[in-house]
Image 1 (cartoon, rainbow, N blue to C red):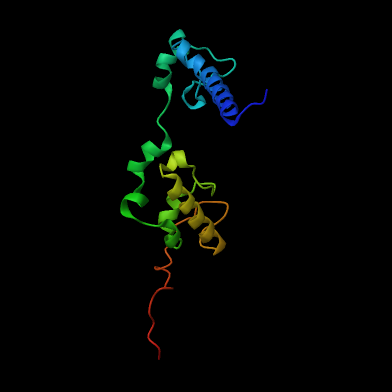
Image 2: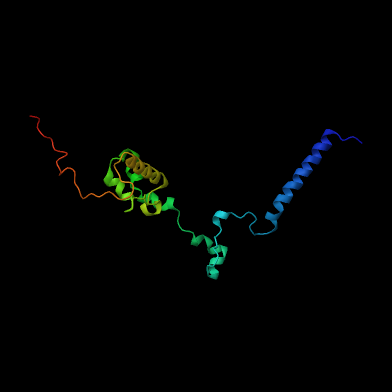
Length: 158
């Protein structure tokens, strides 16, 4: 017996419905989670003691710290004032606030900047170092005020 076009399309539809039913069956059977999102599950580390309340999924959302984006949006002065730190690579007083005593660029969790502003500050610091304005291995010493040494005075030409 030869199958007609309508019979083959009907069998394809039945096969498709069977696949959909198999995929939906675990969801319809119970309230347990089938698709677990790793972002919302708590991480457990070896050799660490946990309280039983920390092991239940109901309380797991309480233990996640706020992301840096939520906390830094209020503290980021560059975003609130609309300043691009890359354009201020000559402003050493501004850039030294983001450099440690050993000359390292401070991390984002210490500066409180957004990710975009932190990248821009790092780029400005690297640019100032390349021009020789900032030292590479230490924080600049502002002991000498170059204006008081006579370099910035306008002498009359005789």
